[in-house]
Image 1 (cartoon, rainbow, N blue to C red):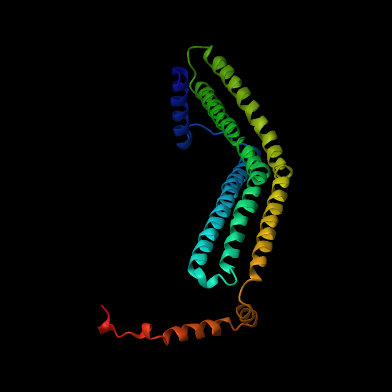
Image 2: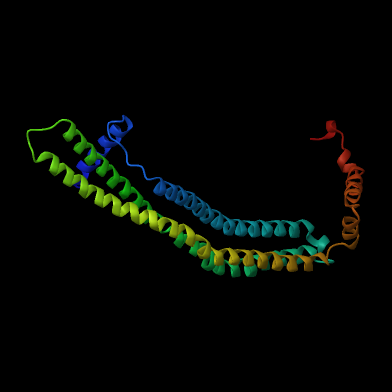
Length: 266
């Protein structure tokens, strides 16, 4: 920071304190304040959307990785017992295809149509925030200049040029403040209004990509279903699957190996 910038920062800090104590009157522009609040609401929503949109893609990858691990474990669990129908192999193949073909083929389009546009929208926020910060600084400079004029009038000085000089400085400060204030008051609503037509295509793309993923995953997993045990499928459809599971558990309990006395273990 330059020496001039440092002095301005110190002066503004002092002005801020004097505003809080009521020694300097603060400029109030209700119209601008409403637009800045609307911008803050939109900024928070878009940044959250950017975070969640990236999280969706990460979650999709994590889910398919978990599916593959489950499939590999199931295939190993069945072992030779599943060789007669190969259901474990079919399931493993299906989830591998979902990961290799469906998810990876959606990655590029999702970034192009959803993530990148949202990120580009967010990229404008730092510049807008800089303009808002600059407006605040210019407003503070103007308020400080007005306060100096007021004090000089209330306590006249022997220097007859003091009040005109301070009034000129206040007018210049007001001109700088008004220019930024007017620009932001006019352009913030335009930016906010553009959010809908800008993000509409990304929203449509998001829905279509999710639909495609669900459809392709359904088709691949539905194909695996035909290899499942017919009795199990029927029990599931009729609501008797719980009874089927209980029967299997009962058969396990009846095995001698599951009823070894505790004292004979070791």
